[in-house]
Length: 413
Image 1 (cartoon, rainbow, N blue to C red):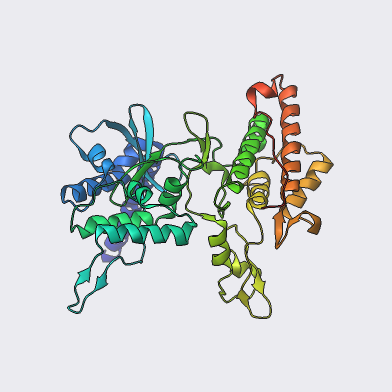
Image 2: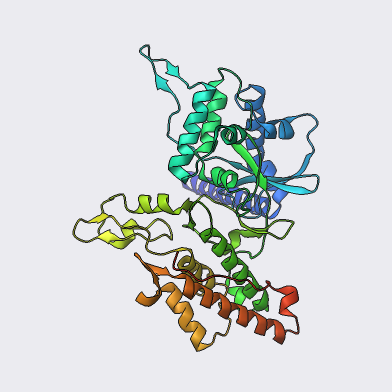
């Protein structure tokens, strides 16, 4: 009798747990399908925390007043359609989409201890100099005092160390700094304001969603070719940046999006670096057994076989990463933009050389980096392929596709 009762109790508990698990899975599935509900469930606490810190005067900035004020004009709060690792939530203001993000934590202390063990923070003028030095060392960009003041565009109250610490967290965030420093070049989403370590950028309309096996059945080859050309033009712009080229160590097709003015930008600059800083990172002497130990995401280093240390600069470049990860993709279940597109044998050869360039098409000192001559050749081949697809579909490539671009061939990356 007692055994039967225990068995019934055990079965009842198992059913209860199973029902609870199914309800939890159903709840989270609904949250991801319903972006507004997702915001209420997962992201609303971030907004509440931001406004609470603002009321306590720990955070400051124009975004605080816009999001937390009684006269806030923001509405349509939602979870992001993609990139939930970077974007906390999106909201609309006067019809424009804002993407709210949070700067990454950093362990670089802004304060120091005096003889009494008390934390001492820099004065605002000293803080400007610290930010200025950080930008020189991390980005090889020199700003004058007026530009630094413009960059620190929020008001930091006197003797308010918490506000200064939150701003320092912003300036140590690569995604935020790239958006601010290269704002005029329009390659990353424009930073529209900040509140402590939170900041908002313009929202982008993602051009190509996550690739899947269904791509082989879709009749959107013309659009994919057009997108490939637009991304190549974006990479040409990255290589033309001053004072030095920008290198993308992560390149995903579903992170490219357009502004309302149809300008192509990359959604996250978290893994984008100036060339000199990336070369230093990859060649700083970390112990290694193989070349893979020296890689940083898609940016490839090289292991010194004699010293067993990473001592070489980046060996590939943006074009090699583009060919391997964007055009070819990661196999059947992660197709690239050219998956399912019939290529001529000469173009197959060019694409193969882009992924694994022979010596005559390598950038000097970078054995896996296709040179500009090969990149321009690939661009022209892609353009011819796009024009042929447009003609077959009865469209004028000049009307629907990218206009002709004059690209000078040179020996740089």
